[in-house]
Image (cartoon, rainbow, N blue to C red; front, side, top):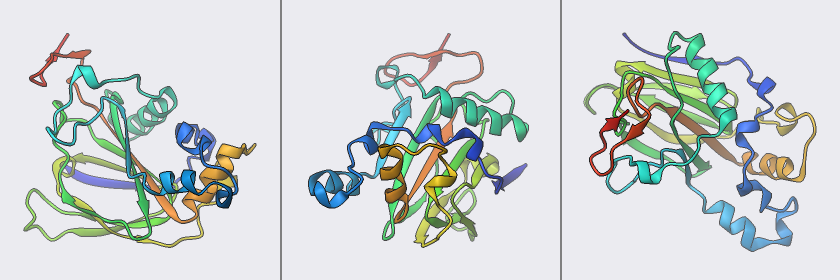
Length: 223
């Protein structure tokens, strides 16, 4: 079965605690007061969580692993269970930071040892055109609009399908007050950031069920 389901239901009840990060604690509310911090944030393109993806080798390793954020793990598990994937374990994530001129070329996600569980994708901030293709680039892609608060679950054949983000679209549907009840300075900085940017968090399982560790060097799993 090949499917991608876009969840429009708000995830505000989580208070978006999964987005709490030192990244936004270093960005002043008035960005004009500290151009160096703003420049640093503007250059940010991605962050990895849990098993850290090696962009050169495309292989995970036990030596590049940190604790996966508990709040994001619980949220991902809830989404996976609701969509029939109750065995899913959140073990790695890539957080992509898009600016209005950003794009992501066609690619597949195939570094994980276990490919049977879905990729769960959370969108915040500006909208994006998401293209979902097939097993080769010859398959015409289907365009999908992803908006702030949407959740996409890539399962079945779509788990290994080509996909891309060719364009970011402006939106007014990303009010930080909807995500947080009591805004801190970091929350306000986050709100200013997503007013002209998009954040995508895509979560995946790396190891087969029951496996806890990966042997060094070869990317295989061990108990």
